[in-house]
Image 1 (spheres, each protein chain N blue to C red):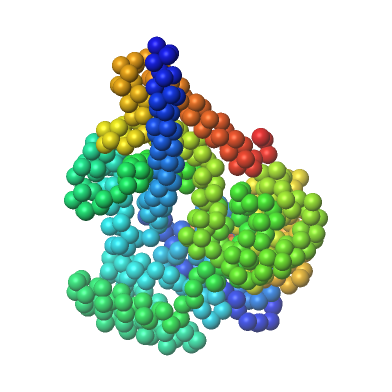
Image 2 (spheres, one colour):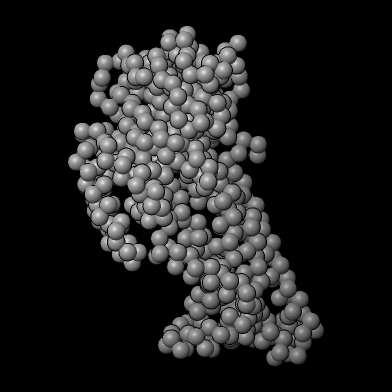
Length: 229
Length: 318
């Protein structure tokens, strides 16, 4: 069992595919989270902005619809729909990794916007008032004062989101992107030995997720300005 | 009613016929007030009387439902002409009221009032689908008189009951973020000013501490100098000692007294009667959304005229 795996993995240079898969998974998860965070923050702010006019109202409705749709359908369905139907119809021919990042970004934006909204709401209203009373505009107070505090509050939840994002990228094999899962699957299927490759796959994901949870803990401590640490 | 001992200097803030409702609850029912340069106005009254709301209307943290707030020669209200015109559209009685009130203005802004009143009378005859033109007209009309609210707020310092120091910034950053961001000072100038202010209150060693490590009294004193770092023309205090331990009230009041002695224009909402007696140049009693008595400290406490004030004082001064 081991011999077949080692032969395939090292001598036949299967590890190269695995490395590609690993880096693709990492890239897609990181950029997906980044896109999701930026877009999610914008959506959260649009939903919370206290201005009442027709333009903002329409924008709020659009954001509501966006969140409802992306939270209401499975990521696999979104992946298939966007990859095989929507993007080709729009004439968008993107590199696999870029496309996957965008799709996962769009998906996680829906979740992160809700997390962010909760985070912003959890910041004391007085912070916004103090900022405004010093002559800051709404946006500037948000960016300089409220969002950094909201970010600190939602960091653990955001870490969770990142972890589930990484695990979700395993469905990418459906649209033939070489991610970590796909690379081990290829090894398994070419040798008809399933046990070791898939155990290795599971270990890989576990180690990545564990490292991220350590990173999140470290960041939580970094951002904590509370006296009672 | 106005027995003002202070000789009339230039007026810093004027409010006229200020109304504010939260939903159906009417909090302010037509408040008029003028705050002159160097004056120390103390506002007292039972809870729910609208004194905090009134104070928050001065820098438009609370948007008045109706009425005017002037900062020097600049009209701050209405920030949102839509709000204004929506209200007008909603109620005909309001429309009439507004027209009447706008029409009986004083000389200085009489031209403006006449114009607005005229416009409203004219436009109110228009049908609903012409509301847009109406809004535009109002907006244009006001735009020549209004000052950007953020610019005005930079000149109006405010101190809150719950300090509201920025928790994500150090004490020094709290003091410098606004002057630097608003490009009023360079980083060096802002730091220099901040250290001078910290030295004044004896907290230089806390420059790099975060607010959560400070005591309530320290927080509030830093909140005061954060406002001072903007070099404001007037300072608003919203019950600055109400959330403090009794032990720490003294140090905050001391700093406020110092400011008063330096000639800062101040509007203070407080329950500290001792402070009011000692520092105020004018005391205002608010009840039920109205200013019910206004006097110099001596007469205010010695011979109050209003029945509710008498009752209030008898309970507070024991």
